[in-house]
Length: 160
Image 1 (cartoon, helix red, strand yellow):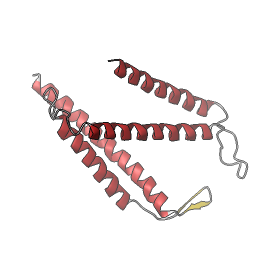
Image 2 (cartoon, one colour):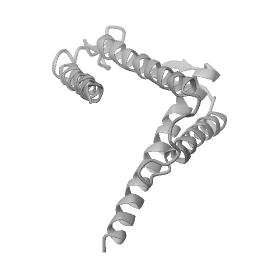
Image 3 (cartoon, rainbow, N blue to C red):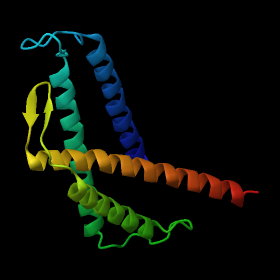
């Protein structure tokens, strides 16, 4: 139980840091003009936000790799069904849907160059990868919403 409390504390610490950092991002030096073109803003804390996002991403990646290695080291000794919930089927389904979604959205992503603030972006891999993450996020949020609605409706109907 102590591990769950520590994980919850770490999560709350990350969320609180994000809230404070993004509040400061918008309240401190947000309207600072961009030197080459004063028509655009160059927020003062852009670098801090970027470093924070990269750090959270690396942390999430490390936790994911650790969890995968721990599960593999146990040799699949986890229970397939926990309290009537098919945990193994859900884990395999989530991994499969995530992988398929990432591959399909990467292949479907555009690599056409485009211009932002007068600068042309034309790196095909970077453009396809950015498209992949945006489209995958939209798909995953939609699937999560559908799962929540399905679970809520199913629970409501079972309790009637």
